[in-house]
Length: 218
Image (tube, rainbow, N blue to C red; front, top):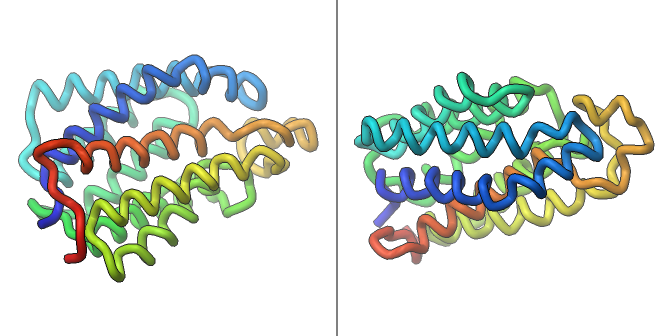
């Protein structure tokens, strides 16, 4: 079995929980190399996503992700709203009307999300952005999809994203506000990469919760 709308809604709710719990941490990361609003914006945006989901429960995983996309684009300021909004919108489009997301569809949805961020932000791996979490996550997800189920895909993606976020610490930023700091941006974690890793870990937690299928090969 794959993962259905219950998983997608749980993913977004757990993402909101993670943004609330790590709000101050993300603010501090952004204060070091940005404008210190990332944690606040992500927390506010995801709380709004949860509210929208409760007002009009979606019927498919793609529909749930589209709600997230539209809400984040309208509620989150700075670069994060358009970037995350585009990621969720591309993932929603990739999933289409699927009610059951298998390993292959999951990996391709993550790839579509990453490609949306690249198209919007023009960043490449090594630029010290959220792409440094998303690109290794997509590579790992595709590898896992060859032999595992959707939970295996998500776990591989989350682990790779966490490693990718940590790997931004020594990088010199080449994109965004952090790039204005030049060499001084080295030694700080990119907040977008950090929030991306938290969101992908939330996807694993949602798939691992009671009521969600997702282990084993398809």
